[in-house]
Length: 152
Image (cartoon, rainbow, N blue to C red):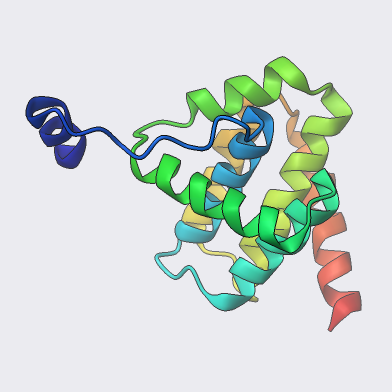
């Protein structure tokens, strides 16, 4: 927040993301990164999970995934709220697709083998912001857990 204020006062600007990057992709990537950062430990397992999820969801090549993640990390660093990301998701996706985003978030949160209370809180908050009912959020969590168990 202080960095943003200093940027404003000194005329510096946050790095602008590539204009060609789809805002939906950037919004989803930003929320996945937030989920990974919630427990203060953004590790390799979470990075790999985010990369796989983005590549699969948006049919992206590895270079495109890397660029998207870098842009999303920059965007998250300069954002103090989730609304721009959740608004884009609500605007562009139907209910079923928003549930898929919640499932992706659960996969990131659970990828390190531990569900931190802050991660759980974030998932509840984002589900509310993108209008995913509690029941669907819970079912998405179960699917993510089942997939995690079967992959180990």
